[in-house]
Length: 79
Picture 1: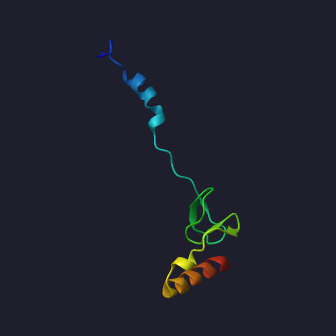
Picture 2: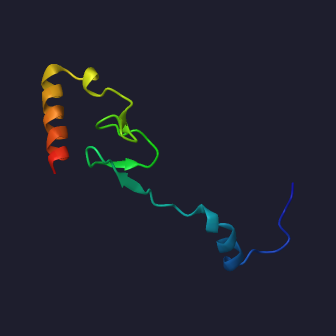
């Protein structure tokens, strides 16, 4: 079994761990519903990507939920 010959200093250990820091997630704003969305992904709130509808979000909801969601989307578009 391999055994290290010398003790690693704090600086040496810190340099090797430099790549292990946590990156902050950068969010963009959806142009249709103004919700935060990861870049280059479909908005899960309204189902649009680059101005075209990719997912029909309203078809999966019940009638009551659909009305609420439609109101939210229209209010976001007015703002």
